[in-house]
Length: 283
Image 1 (cartoon, rainbow, N blue to C red):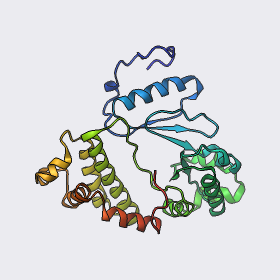
Image 2: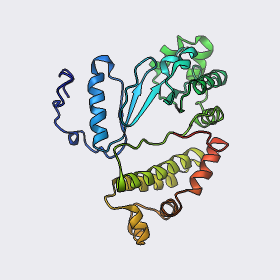
Image 3: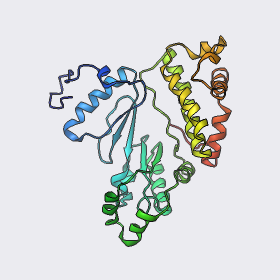
């Protein structure tokens, strides 16, 4: 797309969102710099209008513009090296992304102090990510840490996302990132809510039990629910859910429970197992 056009021109080189492919799922919008921010915001609005859920990445100090989807504040600049004072000024209600890197940002003391500052500032939640780093990147980061940090970067244990999630939950922050819902209503919204529950169960099954086959069965059903044109609640009430090949027996049970009771005992149990206690906050 041509990012040189003026702000008033809403007709970039690619003339339709359909040219971007399958946009039924969450769409990630990375930082583009000050010059391209207007274009990213315009795309964000178009995606929202089309019923697509954007996740928009921001850095500390940047203005988090209003709009659809879920803005995510990437804390990397405040953590490499640690400048925890920057966390005191994160916008209230924002959800943050914490990169967990051995020898740099995974230290328990740094994590607890940072989480306390985020909670005090009014952040809604924080999601940990363990980035895959090349050897070149590790060497560059080693310059920030000295010999001990260098050893951790190359030979340290992989940071535990689950342990960090428990610390975040104890600090009163939402530690499980749910997919955003925007531009949806009626059948589309109900189906997306079902899909979100299935995806969450699949993710937590993988994180707590490491069962890939079981996890994939929930992901598969969730992808179907995202794309289904019919009202899934009607399929449940008519007894036709069993005819859907993408929906396993265990996924069907969860869908039926959610449709009939608006709850999921399996999801509640997995959250308790993953976080060590009931979620203290939700997005």
